[in-house]
Length: 264
Image 1 (cartoon, rainbow, N blue to C red):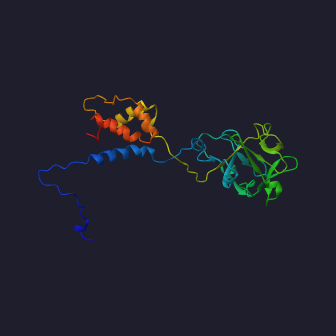
Image 2: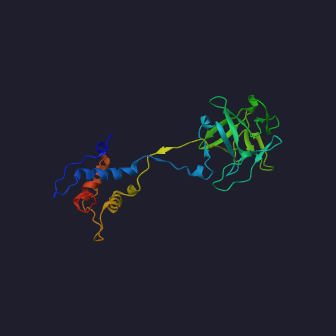
Image 3: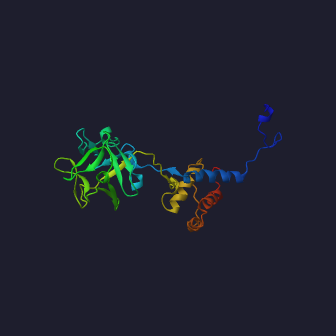
């Protein structure tokens, strides 16, 4: 392609003739600018940020791969080199679990999972209720069922007892068949978990009168330091919002005031 072909072709403007901008284009430009705030954005998971990017699973199907088991706040189940488990020291906000507090989860079926420690051994419920990590393979005693209820979770063993932390010596056990405060836990994952949401633009916070004021502030010129807001009843805006025409109506109201950046 020649340099000539690269020349951008524009509408011919004769000498002495002023180029007039299309009012239609001006309005479209503003609508696009107003609409930018309604684009989908990635939701920030504040809870995950506070735990070093490790987010709380809500479904059994999410318990797979690299996970951590949290008891209390910022404290995780920790594997010891003797095959036992305890709860680690609390982490500061924003810190990730330590290597000894990280496990690998394997789905067994749609209800149960198994956990392997960093020492390469599976978590098992023993006859005396102790939870150990000494198994080379997965049998029934190495299987755990996540139970979700009212936004909380507990891990049920094959014997019908729930995993917990013994308050006396911080050992990991499974001794109770009812869920109390010591049995409640969270399984956290660091797998990619981007959630897309449609956030309300900051200009549209508040009632419709405030919304109109926000958009006037955004687009109006202030050469004389005076804000010009359409005095017509905001009921017009309520009807427009119900019909999905809020932004168009706001634009028309500002245009009538002759004080808008793009609607002069």
